[in-house]
Length: 306
Image 1: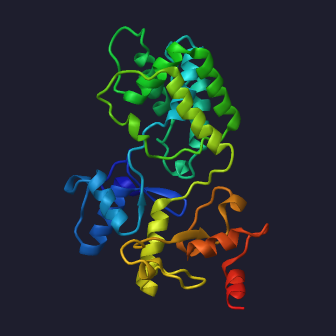
Image 2 (image 1 turned 60 degrees about the vertical axis):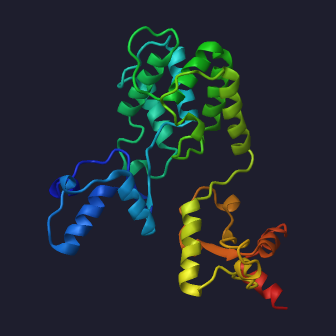
């Protein structure tokens, strides 16, 4: 096995994402450095985590951060616990397996990371939520502030929270992202939000996602802009040549629209490369989308040059 033969263990949080697969970031860096220097490096020889992630991102790679459980995920897990009378749900229970399959299906890289939302992870989250219930007597696991919020919300208004969980299940697509909402990152606080606050937060997200929200990767956008600076020495519009930076010095620095050559609303979730993107000024971007049948960049160039 690759990891064992090079002296590394499986990663739990930080993975390098590349062409639909996830790789252990520390192992990739260690083996690459060994090949470059001729010296053998193992996991004990250098630190990984956030520092290594930042270094890889500066080189243009995409790396996951801490893969905390999202609000929608915890609502679905807590609903199963509530239906089970807040008793422990074993790892080998069919409900654990079914939730694991649903959550893993939300992320394209999950097949490369067996631990991601696996049955062990789901069972541990069940325990986080179970011990976070306001009526629980005994020690609480370190599930974080969000688990406390969700458990307290189910205890206060179970009917409303069950209805919300059912809506999420029927939707089937949770549109998960990997960054935990900022307001729930402080695990030192233990006060619980009201059920109304939790419901409002999730319903606000769901209502947007059930209409027209298309995820865009800010890292891909940044890399496209960096590529343009290297290859064209500017980030001017690739159709008309308008340059916000040159026209509005200081105010327009770094401003440009990054357009998907094939709009996301026609493709659904896809893995995009830099070649799938083009830099446009606001006017050209609007003109591409203005016709009932969107224009390609080449079609818009032909109209502009008439």
